[in-house]
Length: 389
Image (cartoon, rainbow, N blue to C red; front, side, top):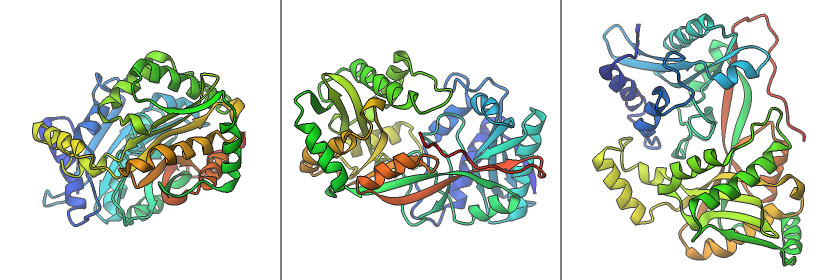
């Protein structure tokens, strides 16, 4: 077996070819859009990348058959955030061979140690947590959701046999659109809806900048009170986020709650894009874009996934969550387009959000693990801190 650093176009093509080899007989696998991955390794498309803080490799056997790949990077936020300087790995793919996996992990570890890392997390994304984050450890029988990882079950053994331990789990929840919210939420929601100052609305007819402004206000209020070292979201950044998803927004499933015209809650959903992207085979070239537009026009997705779900701090526990779900039942269900909804990225370190999901009648659907490997094997491993606030 021998490793090659990915440094030229031919090797980039081989990097993207490897998952097609691993999943060639897996009917559930929907390839990530290759251009989405490539954006992580270019300065113009990834503000975290400085040209030197990321590397990737491909692995071949002695007959020059492609058998694995891995990427590693020094994520500027994570490197200083933890007790030990923590590097990152991701985009891992490998045949079912521990020696091959070990060689990939060893290579990433060696390079990260040279940068001063004392640990590495993976598989994660060289960017935000909404994509390519975590190893699938539960439910290998359904197609992957857009941007969420998918992998063979044996990857769990490859990681854990090497010495990785679960730092935290990310949970996905599922509910039928017709499933009612639990009674504990309905009572509060009904009481809230009696107040003439309270209202839920979708974003149909609104300009993108207004949507971004409402998003910013709820995000900063809802998350700023519960997270240490919280970085306030500025309006220009929020506008950029909205522009990045503009082409796939369905305004009917973007829901905000208001009190006296102040935005106090958001239940932001997108159509399940992989129900479209499965037809483009990972390539958004001209043909892929035409296919995307065609299936979008056909209103192909029957599943919507929750991108963000949150409530302003001073309205926690007052039924806003249930009121937004009830609004969705009354306005989205009659459209008869979306049958299911999934709520993504609920950390097991956030028990309050787990309780909210369960009270909404959602069922745990999938589990992803973010693993950590300490380079000093004599150090005591600690899991992520539970957020009780």
